[in-house]
Length: 291
Image (spheres, rainbow, N blue to C red):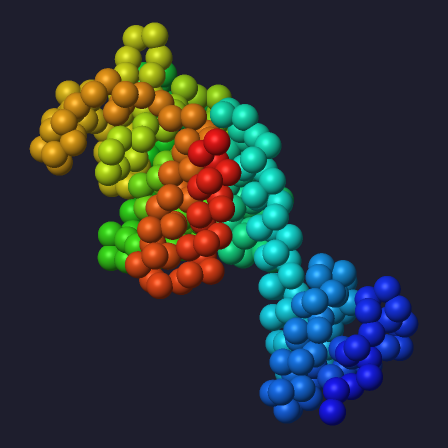
């Protein structure tokens, strides 16, 4: 028999009725739990506020089930927020904001400000190191690459290339592992804090960065620990990979196009993993960013 509080609407639930409903989360009967869970989900994001105090409940079963529902509801909010961002923002959107918002759709609990502060600290350390070397482009890039790839240990995830975590910025920072575009994203966000003339280059089949000043142009393969390339070497790669060469292949991509490519990569990964909910989620983002 259904508990009487389950049939109440959110507008008419008293505090005692909410508590009674939530208390049923610790019921060992899986049918009761599923009924209560669906009822709470039906109340939408409002229910997350009711459940948060139970995230530290002394009963581990209550903690786990409350956390599961709160995480789901927070994910719904993150999904809606990112979709609205994709629809409303211009071509030169705030790439860092977009990357963190995308990460939150998969990891709604992340502390974005803490991650921003961590990137700030990376940039501060790098600024100090750069100040101690000569002003040539080679020495500048060597210093950046030594810090990011040797000291911090960022590297391309060659062993598990199609892991979705390679595309979410928080997990790239946590694990120091990523795919070409996510590592370029981290590289760009850190060097942007130093106001360096570095941009993302979305070649077919690969993503790299480019440092360009009035006197020099250097391409940076971030996936391979910042290997420096000439334009001729990039063209050779494109031809050998069967893509041919067009000038647009080595043109900088806009922040919107870069975010779109991240989502497109994730879409294909989730297709291969047979994860229909995630496939549908990425399809919504791709449509929004393609407009």
